[in-house]
Length: 167
Image (cartoon, rainbow, N blue to C red; front, side, top):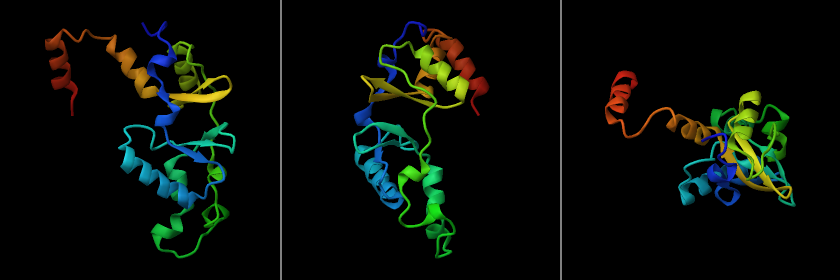
């Protein structure tokens, strides 16, 4: 049951999630993310890399769209940056979004879900001993809760739903 399932069961370990140093140049972050995505064949996390300070303390995350906005002049062919975040020396820390809250591995997933619903976010960091331990995603919680709504053994109901609502 979701009310008793622990975050530890659904979380993605920090080693499996892209991390950027806060002082990393935006252009280097974009290049590194592409390398990581190709080498590790990332299935999750590439759209929201985490940002840490020099001591690996979590600062927040950065959206891909913000990374792309900061180098807009390069792909639009305008030739020159039009603002301070578009300078070649812009760093990831300029784009950081802080997390609305965090959970521990031993918290129930419903605590993470409450943070997500209250703040309309899809990620919550998992902290252990004040250090980043992992990340829990809304899609994983959703899939867990949704699996309780129908019995996978009732194939006919599943097939009817798929035929009826799949576009």
